[in-house]
Amino acid sequence: MRVLMAFLLSALASMSMHAANQRDLQRLDETLDQRDSYTQRKLQHIDYLKAQLKAQPDSEQQLRLYDQLFDEYYVFKFDSARYYVDIALTLSRKLHKDYYTKLNLLRQARLYAIGGLYSEAIEVLDNINIEGSRKDLKLQYYLTYFILYSNWANYCSDDRFSPIYAARARDFLKQAMPFLEPSMPFWDYYHGEYYIYVERNDKKALYYYFRTIRRLSKHSRYYAMASFAIANNYSAHGDQERYEQYLIEAAISDAICCTRENLALQDLATYLFREDNNNIERADRYINIAMEDAKFFNARLRILEISQKMPTIVASYEQQMMKRNNTLKWAIIVISLLVFGSLMAILYIFRQNKLLTNRRHQLSQSNSKLTELNFKLTELNSRLAKANTMLVDTNRKRERLAKLYIDLCAKFIDRLAHYQTFVQRKIKANQVSELLSKISSSRLSEEEAEVFRNRFDKAFLDLYPTFTSELNALLEPEHRIANSDNHSMTSEQRIYALIRLGVKESSEIASVLFYSPQTIYNYRSRVKNWAVNKETFEEDIMKIGTIIQ
Image 1 (cartoon, rainbow, N blue to C red):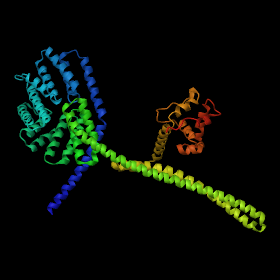
Image 2 (image 1 turned 135 degrees about the horizontal axis):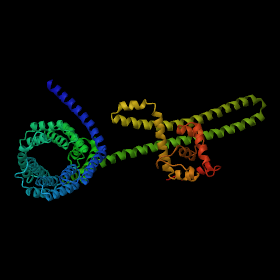
Image 3 (image 1 turned 90 degrees about the vertical axis):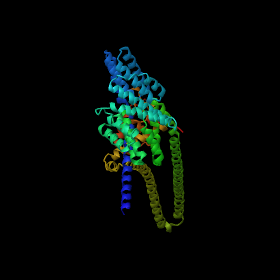
Image 4 (image 1 turned 180 degrees about the vertical axis):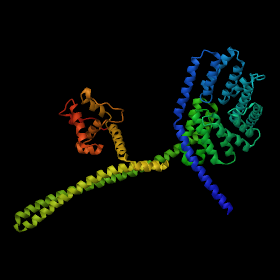
C-alpha cells in the first residue's frame, strides 16, 4: 500500500511539474518574442556609453568607459568586444597603466576563449606576468584559464585531449578560489563550480547555485549560468523534469540579458525534440534562434555544435509539416467535393423549378381551352385557377426562402468558422476565462463587422488590385480618396466595391457593411458628386478592373 501511495504521489508530482514546465515554455516564448526590444534597450545603453566616451577628454575615464563597453559586448558581439578591448589595450600601454594593460590582456584572452580561439588565448595569457599584481587581477587570471580550458575540453569532446584540458581547468579553478570574496556577485557561482569540478559534490554545488539565483536577478548573466548548471546537475541524476525547468530559466535569462553566446536554448531545443513530438515546431524555432545568436556573436564552437544538431530537428519539423500539408490537402479535396455536390443539388432544384413553371403554363392553357369547350366546367376551372395561383404563390415563397436560407447559411457558416477558430485557439492557449469574456462582450458584433470589412477589403483588393486607383481616376483630382495602406479601403470605396460586384441596392449594401441605408445613400451621393462624369459614374464603376486568375 505504501509503495502504491508513493507511486501515485510521484506520478502526481510529475504531472504537476510537467504542467508547470508547459507554462514556463509559454513564458519563454513570450520572452523570445520581446528579444528585439531587449536588444534595442541594450544598444541604446551602448550608444549612451559611446557618446560619453566621445565627450570624455580624460584618458583614465576613457579606459573605464572602454571597460564598460567591453562588458556590454562581451557575450553579445565578438568583433565589437575585440575592437574595444584592443583600443583599451593600446591606450593603457600608451599611458603606462600596468593594471589596465593586464586587465585588458585578460579580457582579450577570455574573449578569445569563448570565441573558440584557444591557441591565441593561451599565447596572450602566457605573456602576462601576474606576480605582484592586485588580487582582483590574479582572480581574473586564474578564472580566465579555467574558462579557457573548460571550453577547450568541451570543444574536443574526446577521450584523449578532453580529460587533459578538464584537469587543467580544475587546477586553475583551485588556484582562483583563495582570491574570491563574499561581496563579489559571482562568489556563490564559482563555489558551485568548485564543488562540481573539483570536489565532485553535487549537493554542495546545488546549494551554491541556488544561492546564486536567489541573490541575483534574471538580468544577471550569472543567474543564467547558475540555472544552466542546476539543469545539468539534475540531468546527471535523471531528473528530466527539473532539467527542463532550469534550462528554460537559463534560456529566459539569456534572452533578457541579450546573451548571444549561449548554450541553454540549443540544449532545450534538443531536449524537446528528443522527448516530446508535440514540441517539434517549438524545438525548430529554438534551434534557429540559437543559430542566429551564434552567428551574430560569431561563436565558432556554438555554430559547430548547432550545425550538428540542426539538420535532424529541421528534417523532423519539415516531415511534420508535410504530414500536416497532406492532411490539409485531403481536407480541401473533401470540402471541394462537398461544395461540388451542393452546387449540383442547387442546379437540380433550379431545373425542377423551371420544369414546374413550364408545366404550370401548359396547365393554364389547357384550362383556358377547357373553359371554352365546356361551360359546365367553369366553376371547376375557377377553382383550378385559384389552386394554380396558390401554387405560384407557394413556389415564390419557396424561392424566397431558398434564397434566404442560402444567404443565412453562407453568413452563419462564415461566422461559425471564425468562432470555431477563435475558440480552439483560446482553449489551446488555456485562456478559457478570456474566451468567456470575449463571447459575452457586447463588442462582439462590432468586432465581427470589423473583421468582415477587413477580410472583404483584402479579398476584394486581391480580386481587383487596381480598383482604388481606377476609382480615383473617375473622380475629380481634389476629391480623390487616399488609403491608409494597400490592404484596406475606406467606407466610400467599400460601397462602390460592392456595387462593382453587382450589389446595387442601398439596403443590401447597408446589410452587408453593417451601416444604415441612409448612411449608404449619403456616401453614394457624396462620391457621385465628386465624379468627373456624374451621369455615367455607376456604369463606369461596373467597367473597373478584371478578375486575376
